[in-house]
Length: 351
Ligand SMILES: [Fe+2]
Ligand SMILES: [Fe+2]
Figure (cartoon, rainbow, N blue to C red):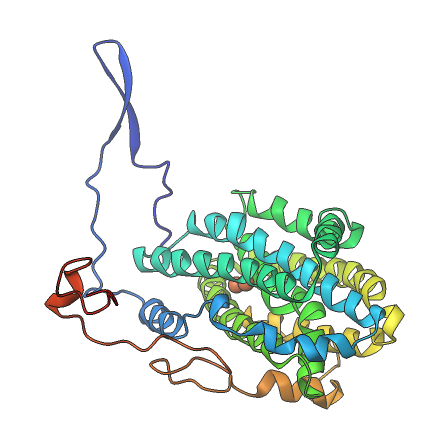
């Protein structure tokens, strides 16, 4: 059962000649003690447990590694992250808002709200990396590139259009899963490759935290897609499947060109393409479909596979999340904490 869209349930009322909006149905408070889909609750808990912020990761510790890279490899790192910034911007500005129009439960809205905020954290985290590793001129150039590069813009605009097509809610979900479980990986390859070679460990830590989020997002949105798919007739399901595979082919065709643009200069193109075909299959799996490409985990560069499969360095949220992810030490507040500037303020060295 699909819930009402925001627009439904509202009716125009006229009061003394002035048009006003009046809701005809009661508005319901979200009740987390009556959860109709346990996956919503489990996903909320998982996502909130793995909350993180870019500012807690000491990227500047990677500066020595960064200086050992030649300009071609530095170019690849900067522009790969430029591309990822654009995709995470799309997710945070349009993607989750689009999916939120078609929720089945109020708890799904809450989960999507969480995802939307984290997409903003992801999009911002690349800027944290840029501000540490790149000059202001290089940063300007990277953003000019991501705002105009043909193949990057192709996929972004195609998915933007699907997000804004309210006639096809399931196509929005396919787009989101393809973006997060497939299209991100031409970019994720680079930091994982360097991680496997003991370089840029803190940059890689940010990417692995993003990847960990995307893995949950892809699974969750794929699951919601499968619920919707089951409600279609056999004929409609087949049509949706045909569309999905055709869309994947088109995205792959574009992604091949994008990968050449980024990686030809360092000679990594073929291994990146293997990696993205492997992840395209995983995207299909999230959507409950059979793989399209013959590539398996064994075909992917083992250095990169190793990077992707390891967990972040430390999962203990109360001390650290991930390698170098430092939370401030928390101590309980007491009454004297409120005595700011007063004679018995323990924090004031003049007292
Ligand atoms: Fe993201
Ligand atoms: Fe995501």
